[in-house]
Length: 158
Image 1 (cartoon, one colour):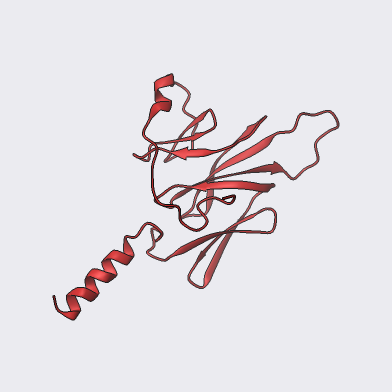
Image 2 (cartoon, rainbow, N blue to C red):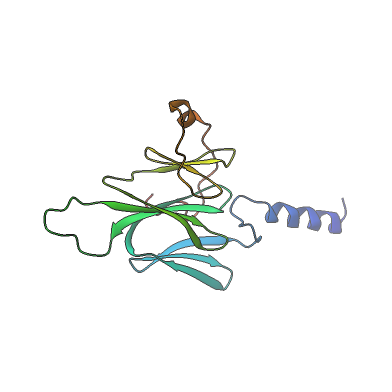
């Protein structure tokens, strides 16, 4: 193999590596302040400010979706039960697809290997739209979970 072939093979391998985003730029996921989720790519940092104190997040292996959750910023009324809010975020557009509030947790989020479903504790969500799956059977939770090596920022708490 000559130099040009090896160089092209190297470039192809780097561009499809797990930690490269859809745009081919290595990404880092950071929390800036209490309410801001940031995506660093090269010299640019894009930010998404949410109305919660961010507690944790999970990012899928393709780095196209994130589930971010936290405690609401506004003060609760005295005697009101605490709750958390989870956001399904399209990382490429840095937009919130959907919002879910819950009275406990969430403790974890998992993505399906076929990129069709997201599970946030006991909530089943469509991967593409972020919509709640309303008509489901208990077998729908038994899908194959995606597996990939951890990359920097895949989860906030290690």
